[in-house]
Image 1 (cartoon, helix red, strand yellow):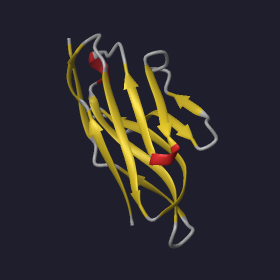
Image 2: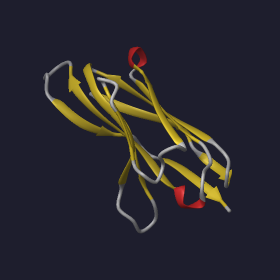
Image 3: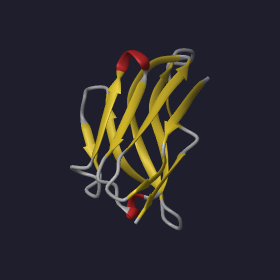
Image 4: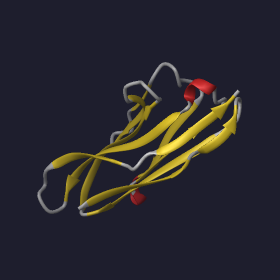
Length: 121
């Protein structure tokens, strides 16, 4: 069984910074990618940032230059540093990981429990 445990988030004023972290635990053979999606009230969940095992990084245009995704392979952990936050960044941020199971050798996508990020104007 695999679990994603998120931490971070909270309330910050516009222009401020927050950091999210997500750690994958359990029967993990290999982590193919880890990333962060976000869902604002009344909107669909969308990709904010993605980091692959090969080191490829992808950002949504709305966060480029402000958010930085990084990872610690040894710890199966991914971080999202969010700077110059705007009220429109307010959302629940979900960690997502593509993981190959140690038990089945099958890769599946897993989700974290979500972390609320609220940016006040």
